[in-house]
Length: 184
Image (tube, rainbow, N blue to C red; front, side):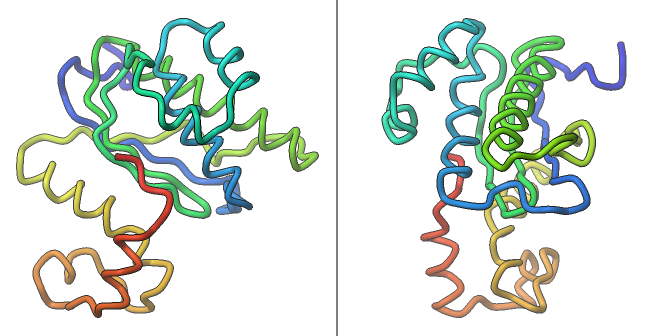
């Protein structure tokens, strides 16, 4: 088994960031495009991907419930300006790699074409971490959900937040609740 073969029915935290820590999402449509790619790239039917992106708006795609999840089960995630986090449950050997290849290649092609860029969009291949137990799963979910706080808190610390050493203000709680680019 290679290092990138993920075990079926196990949970993984997948993440990546822009090359040189550059922003991956420069406008609202970029976030929507990436979320659409996550949704429709999770289908084995490649023709579906092209047809859906040509025929429907991003909002219509995101509202649809009839697209199969053939590769991975997406539990939650968040898109930040220069990186993303996704928590998945692997469905089979090599399926996660196929899914991520479709998402990252599709987004890089879109991004480079839209912004007249050449070269890499992402810093490297996506990274992943195996979730080993329920406590780790809870911690990763919390980390992903609270990640947007980095945008508004100078002293953001996931561990301090987890253990109650930092209390969120109403403004910070409201920001997290309304952060528009959550997955799941």
